Length: 307
Image (cartoon, rainbow, N blue to C red; front, side, top):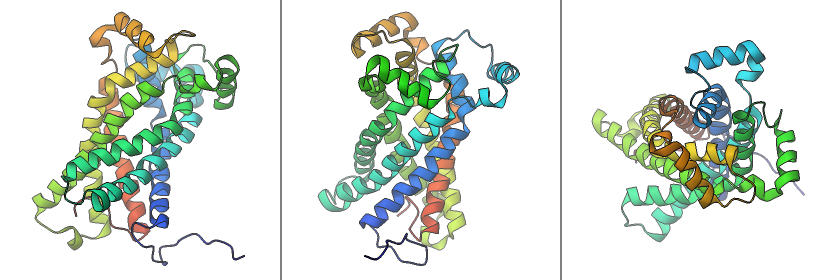
């Protein structure tokens, strides 16, 4: 039997084929895993301040304190579940978004409003992607928000949760994760698509007249604008995910835990750490779209949006 060969830029891949969607999923892995890992220092401080607003007086003070005590490893604490979890999530999110956008927009509802298609496709994709992300997010949050740390590394965290709570313990934050990530991704993709359309309209040039570098520049700008909206829309659920994974009691239902936590922190507590998250998510989203669309250009695919 002949061995399978990976597609290369010199080998034309048919758009909307299984290979195309698989390549888009790989692009999502490359776009999300490294970028989320790169902002681990921001995420670490954000999560700790969400759980305990008084733990640090400022973000820079937090990093100085952590670095003095633990070195660079401490600043990037939780990077391994971040990298693996968001690699899986990125592959699912971008890959299935392309699948569902094609199925909903080109096959099932060709005359439907495009924004509705973007929203439905991104929601469907994120629903699936979060199932892969959830166990690693649970480990990451527990590692980052408990002092002393719940576990020293991802493997220890996985073993401790499964031994104490079973595999269900890895998924006890799934509903809040959906509540955070699905609106986030709907805003991320729909706003990106509409922003890119608006940029091309503003410069009054067809997308086809721009080279690959110029098109990915548009992707970067559109991604940053979309990222700011994502951060605001999803932040209350992000706080609740951190609180649930750090403070949910054994045997406590998700609804009861959410009600108890909200009673403790109130509405204003749901917005702890928002400025940090805007900086983190805006930058993160911009670079994800830049990397993803650069990968598509490398593979000979059209960039996302603007057509």
